[in-house]
Image 1: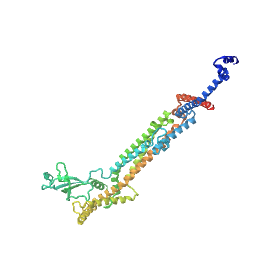
Image 2: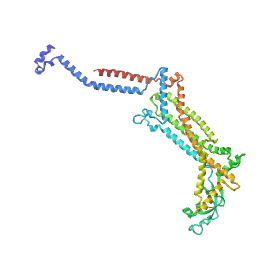
Image 3: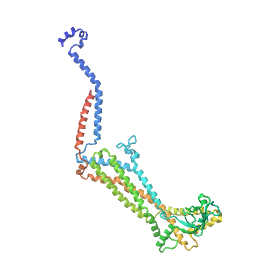
Length: 479
């Protein structure tokens, strides 16, 4: 560079510069310093960019899940992990206790489902059980027959102009049916009662408006439920003494009402089976986790196992519920509250009789006494040719009512607990048992968990990219 020095010394402009800047060596040193300073400025940005690319590729690799195992032991281990994860999810939903899957904001870490959504099964179960209980309650003794009624002859339909310009003579002496809703004391033929007469075509306006009643003479009675019980007791009567109820008769009559429980019971079972199928499909199809989603053959096979399991458990539960019905057809209880319930039934009838004893407006002591004695004679029957038979019928009705209340509550609880035990809570264990059969041979697992060539190529490409970026990041951090 000495031969160029005269150039700088003789140049009008460059001769003014410091000699440190003369020559190629000086230029190269200056350019090197500039390059190093620029690189120092860009390294943090390049390091951040490489780190971001590296994290993106790692996230993409995580989405692919673990590598598809190609060894029998590894393949079975991966299968067991999938089964374990599936069972935890399914059992969590069935218990309505899915906190193991809830993220920090209340959502499912894997599917975004909320805890509220996971409790759909038991909301549906409670609704099915409540509907079942209502249907059973409707089938109480006597509900299937017409209510008691009587025919009465109207003897004083507000005549003498008390009903205005309505000609009520059409009602005088006519017979009409009147429905009795648990009226005590029950009427007898010949009783003179007061009733509101509101009948289409022949309406007493004073009765219709309220505050007035017509006099009605009872000419005939109709008590379908009592007659039904009387007939059945007569058909079943054996050697027992008068006043003693025949257990076989009671069992036969009560069994008729138990038979009516079968339809709502099986309907409840079908509703809950459908809810369980919907939950299973939701877990397996609508929100499958990545490890299961990547194996469609395995997912389809598990879905078939789930349908078969629910069908099997439903049939098993149906048989158990039929057994409960058979047990209820043979009345028995150790619950001594049955006597309390029976006495309460009889007390209610007495209280109702006392409340209605002044029905004709006469509430004197003699009238109350007269009506209570009348009620006692009609329910405990004294001096009537038909008295003992009527008494037995009433005793049978009271006992049916008391025992039905006890048995109905017991049966409703037993059905709910049996469906829970034999269908809902048995489902995960039964499903796991059937799924584990899929791993009985490695050949079957290879078919259910095949290695996809496309996935292998994609995974190799990402892994190679991650390796290159990792080396670049390491070199950048060393500077």
